[in-house]
Image 1: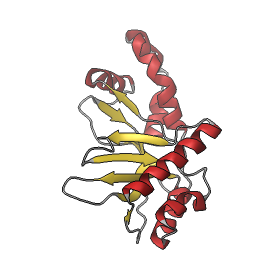
Image 2: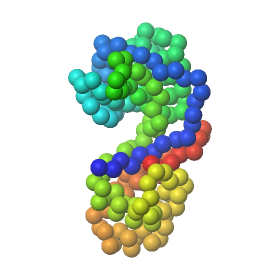
Image 3: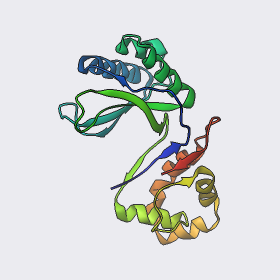
Image 4: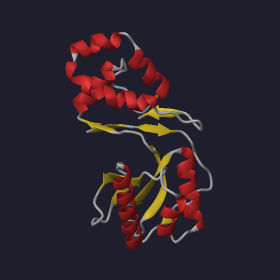
Length: 190
């Protein structure tokens, strides 16, 4: 599986990771779930592992929530408030993870844009998407949002879709990715 997602290049300084206890994390997840259900959004994005395992990661979409509603789960820690404010200002998610060989659960600033869609596709479909966009199928890494927009607007795209009609199902997601903007930094599809 290959994941396509939007990433920005902002590198905020002086943000320390913030520890969160398992019970606090559970309460945060309940708050995110309740708030998301109320407004019709999925605010928890699973990355890997499960909460019962030693190693896991998930991300929280917090831009639409009051800072105090999130900060209470970190007992209003000053570093946590700075992390939440920075995430909201930059339009990023919070990342909550326990990494291998680390006993603590840590919240950090995610590299993923708040509302950015992610596409998980098979390797063969990923190579077909790259070819459809006119990119080298051996390319990996990042392309600028501007390059993605140019590729999607290229008139040759229609003939590429005619050759691979099954790829049309990915166009709405790619269009949503290309529509994301950031006043603070450059965006890339990775």
